Length: 422
Image (spheres, rainbow, N blue to C red):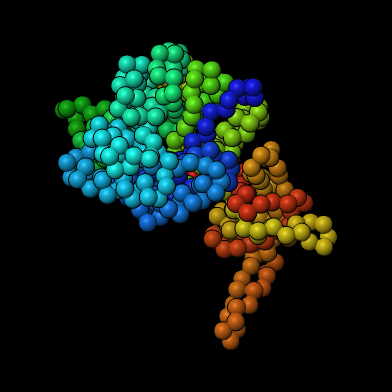
């Protein structure tokens, strides 16, 4: 990344408090999240209105901003209760709302006048006239439609109002429908993607059925596993951030509010370090370490690509655990306590993700399980040396040759691992 140019904001997904904390730890400039209504990721943990002040407090303490998504399709019942939501969000100190409905814009101006308005990608803003209209209505930022190329964004930037910011998705899942406005989930399952309840039928395998032989299935591709005929490849623009900055993008956005903290931390770390001057190729392996579909550059340099062949998801590493504490020992090593997520054995190579650092490796040594027992009402802690750490959510300790920070991640290689999420 060219350091002489103003760096775009790094905007990270926060599907819950855990993801928010890891996004901040690994260097996000801003996070976007949703409450229990009006967002398009209802499968995420999300936040209650009562939790928003704490989320804002954590982010602002890290000099990061908080944007709240209110971009679901709005019904009359929704707009009736939206004013109270907007007033509560404004009182909590959020920095912006992300909206796509004109009524939501009007209510935001009235009930949260100090909160910036960002126009969601759901609005399909693809030209300078539309951008200027949103700006006249009070918008500070446009989230570019997913279908735009780098050249399209540059043209929009050149003709749009100078103080109107542009945001673009750079990483994560892509939708096969224009700007995410899909009807398939509603049709097949009665669960509307435009109301935040997508069941992702575009990710299912499909086969042909001939009318006179309804019980006989024919794969669409010559593959016994069927074909993912509607499934898009994931977006990955890690090697092209200079192009986006040159086109005038003010904020780069990572998709993934239904992803877990390991995914958020890993991807945020990669983009943060490349924005700060690291070589993109140094972090290609990290983006393979988390659950993903085959990568592409979306529509930025031409038509987006589909992923017709399985397996659809893959990842090379599993999260071993998160660092809880680190103390130096008398022998010069460091005693690291971790919250275990996936097992590892004595001698396994553990890779460490720390903010601003290249990935480091250590050998799992001196594994101890930390236990707490009650003795006459007084808690007593003790350690047990073990050959394997294998009790998830239990605290273990290992020896490290270098210091770590709380919330650093330890991962372990799993070459054949595939998963629905990470």
